[in-house]
Image 1 (cartoon, rainbow, N blue to C red):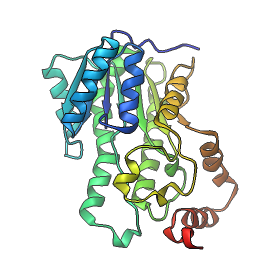
Image 2 (image 1 turned 180 degrees about the vertical axis):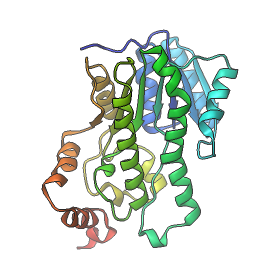
Image 3 (image 1 turned 90 degrees about the vertical axis):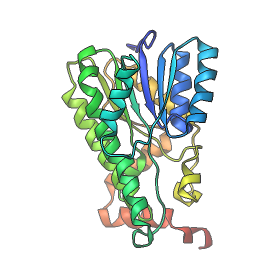
Image 4 (image 1 turned 135 degrees about the horizontal axis):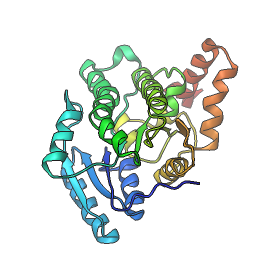
Length: 269
């Protein structure tokens, strides 16, 4: 093991007002990291910041920002610089999913989904990766999903977005070899967060057991602590089995199987 020392350093976390983002904040604060918490809901960010600062004696800066806007990475980097903060690590966690047949989805909502799940990840990664590579002792985590390992009918845009994040991050992992920067894609399965409240149904979980946010974040941090961290990690043995089982079947079989698992009609069959 070659555990990351977060003490006296600053981790920027997007989507930090709830779910995995908030849990990353809790576990990293416990390991001594100062934090920059980014999300739209300022009230939640301030409440969490106060709790973590009091519990762990770390510095926590809440930054209320809509990351679906064009150029969010440069805007965020400028705001952090304005506050005199040097970021050592980045957790790109912000995102959401939509559920339903593609032809029924609201076009503007789909544009927002791509903007947050894809463009914000690229934009923020680009804005911070130069300084992170220069430091040589931080981490860059982009949160993907097991949905990125195969096409996902009823969540076509979300699955494709996470496939992009997975491929993109693994490429950055290779490009960052020798710099000391640990780059990794984290792929959770169904997790007990507000994700399904936003989606509007738990049918999107495909009937699988939901992990807790604590389990998922522990998986990520444990993988980052390895001497040679992998380019990506899937949280949960069952999720890993499901992701890799698709390699044994044809693309036709896989997409039809996922459709049966994720479709609302499965509950009435």
